[in-house]
Length: 211
Figure 1: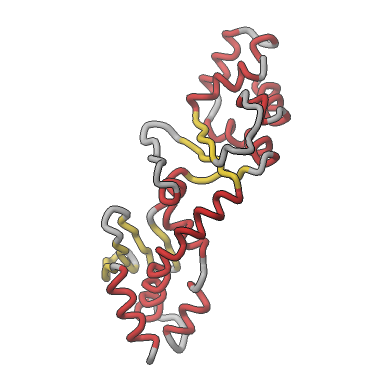
Figure 2: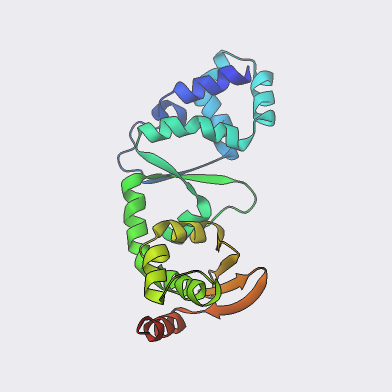
């Protein structure tokens, strides 16, 4: 039964799954366990299975398994899946759910628009990481400029990871980002070394980049 239901979901159109006629003006959609029951009934699975069977499916199904089957239908409508913490950093009107796991599906064009808008505000983070790497990590780079250009310059993946989990690890270094205060904390081998703010980073970076 479980396999059959999941197959019905993965092969259905997103219109049918969510009972929405058109997704043209819908930039993002949240999905979590709260709407799993609606999905089953939108697909008329109550005509194929007894209510007790559907309830057992809902009780037993893991969130990640259900989400996996929804990836295909969402992708066909131009959506990509996004960690809700990352999305909350990009979309000011969204607050992450604390009591239930939620995935955000975002139109790819809308996501790129949001991310480009935010990326410039976090360039200082990449500069801070470059400084810590150059001064503390013992790598064979001859200058801060070389370190920055090789590892961090325009590395949007680092910013995505940092905004998703509030930390980023590289070799034996870990940076932790405090969203409320906009501070970045650097640890090496579990030991705290220093913290950064945007103003401090820009000043120090300009000083070191000339050497």
